[in-house]
Image 1 (cartoon, helix red, strand yellow):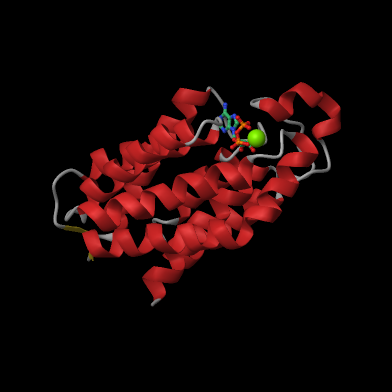
Image 2 (tube, protein in one colour):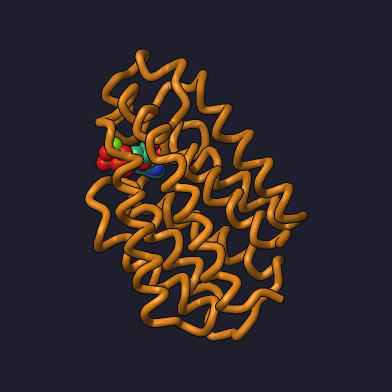
Length: 199
Ligand code: ADP
Ligand code: MG
């Protein structure tokens, strides 16, 4: 079972990964966006870590709802409201339970990812974060490692796609041949989850 402290460790690990990989995320966003994805997420996840350390929410649901709210209020780019919605919806789906199973998290994350699709109007294949998140949520039903691998494969598979949503879609054909920044950061977030689950 995974309790609130586990979810705080996940988001702290995610913040560390975003911090370490911020330059790469920004580089990817400079190719098909506006070169702010690394900075956006660095600011957002630093704020998430800060508020979680201060308020120490106890349940998994409370951790994710607070983190999501913080991302929405601190990140200006499209990714803030999208990731914020994902975490909030996932947290709401987990309810008030003090600890949850991987299967329960997989179902909740599926609801959270559906929230991203609803807010942004994208679907898999549109070259967005959903290309990593949708397969990851599905594979989480099998294992944390399978979710990590599915997210990574999904991010890599965005390279040949043409962007149909978000800023990169303005480039049309020229978005082809570049890895999507949001799918790349999604793979980092899911890898952080697998890492803390294995620790
Ligand atoms: P912005 O595009 O506002 O500068 P970011 O650079 O932080 O925001 O995030 C860009 C990422 O957000 C993209 O790489 C893509 O994965 C994701 N994204 C953008 N629009 C959408 C959308 N409508 N649905 C899902 N993901 C999206
Ligand atoms: Mg950007």
